Length: 282
Image (cartoon, rainbow, N blue to C red; front, side):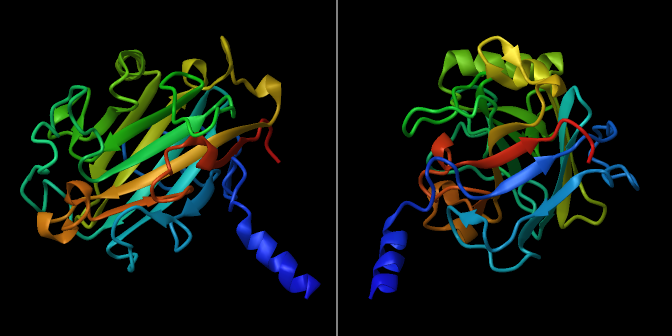
C-alpha cells in the first residue's frame, strides 16, 4: 500500500519544476561555414540530437519520420554557439504547394510585427541565457532570453522567397522586435536555409554570438572563462503542407513539434529544457 501511495503522489506532482527533463550539451569545436551545406566532417565534433516520439506535438501528431523529422548538431567555438538542422519533410510549403495564407491572418507573410514569422516550414530556437524566470513568462526578447525563427521561404535579409532569419516572439514588443532586427542586420545572429538536393527536406545552419545574444546577467555575456554554464533551451520544428492537411489546427498548421514543454505552454521559460555550454573539450 505504501508503494502504491508513493506512485500516486509521484504522478500528482508536476512533470517538471521549472526545468523540463531534457538536456543537450554543446562542447567546443571548429567554426562551421554558415551556408546550409553540411560539408563532410564539418559537424563531426558536435553533439548530435534528433526528434523522436518524446518531442511534444502542438497540432497533429507526427507518426512517420518521412513526414517530418530533424537531425540536429550543436557546438561552440568560444565566441559563437552553432546549431545545424537536417530536416526531413515530405511536402515543402511554397515550393511543393502554393503560398496559401491562413484565415487567421492575411498578413502572415508581411515582414512586420503584423506578420507570422513562423508561418511556413521552419525551425525556432528559444534560449534563456540567464536561466531565470518569473512564473509563466515567455522570452523577454533580449540577450537574457529570446525566441527566434529560421523560415525556409522568407527572411529579414532576403525577403519573401529566400529562407533565413526572422524576428521571433514577443514580436509585438517594440523593444524585442528592434533587438532581433539589429542582431540579424549586424550579423550578431546568422543563419542559412536551403532545400536539400532532390527536395523532401532542407538544411539550416545557425550561428549565435555570445555577445550580445547570451546575456547571463545584466550587461554580462557568456564566455568560456565562466566555465560550464546551464541555460534554458527549447526548439520547435514547424510544418505547413496543403491547407486541408492542417484542418482544425490554428493557421491550418500540419505539425509543430517541440523539444520540451507542454502543447499549450511550451513557450513559457519554466517549461524549457536545458542547454549546457561546456567550456573545455573533454
